[in-house]
Length: 134
Image (cartoon, rainbow, N blue to C red; front, side):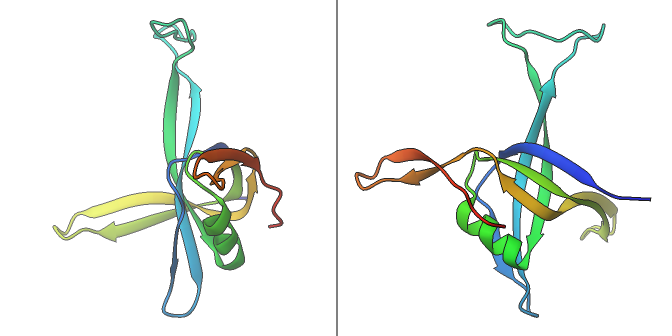
């Protein structure tokens, strides 16, 4: 049996990088994926403007060590990326003693598919394509 997930979506915010006490670098970010919204008959739903409405799901993604450092350095909010990894389920007990469950994607590979916004000399943001080794 295999646990493999492949997601393509946009970063919900800039990645956050931290280090564990053992020296492992960990980057995490949210990834939004969308699919067409459907009505009760299963047909694609159009909004008031005539555009196909979308349902968005948010995924927590975690990257370790070198991959985490590259993602934290070069990925920015809104960037289109593909993430290949595995689903990791977690269980914890909150402060009220209630069992909670959640999941995250542990990334093995992140590819930058879109353009990143970077500031130019005049301080304005400009789209720039990036070709980065991972």
